[in-house]
Image: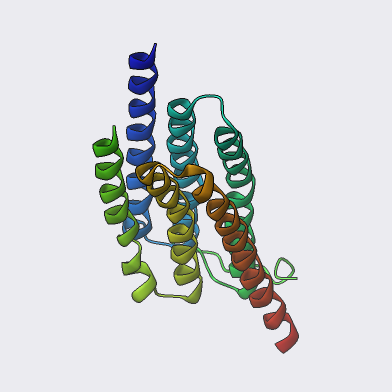
Length: 110
Length: 90
């Protein structure tokens, strides 16, 4: 039982670290602010969820694993909200997307 | 299992150091704030791994919760301030 638990935990942590590596490369490689928000909101959130769920499986049923599940729920709610607020502020500021020919409409800025 | 936590913490430190490039020479202000937010969210996982490495997860999980809430509020307030100050100028 313990061998299976440790194996699943190691697998989850490695999958999460791979997701975070992809998101971290995407922040450098992608050409635009609006496309960089994809890498930091989606793949980072999924990577953090996988790593902390792997640590929960390693820990078992304790009070600390319950608090770790609370951390997972909070990050799954808060990380896309923060990125969306930042992208909304940039759009109101008038930052144009990279692969777009048309300018921002004036009535969308308000 | 402790050696696995140690190696994954080292790899995660290297991953956290990668967006510093975007913090140092991002083209706009928003790129820098976005990369800072990415570093803050990945540091949560690093603190949790260090807690498992030391065997004191009961202490480090409270630090993790406080750090997550502070990072979220900071990012949200900066975004709110940038959009509102731009409107006040116009």
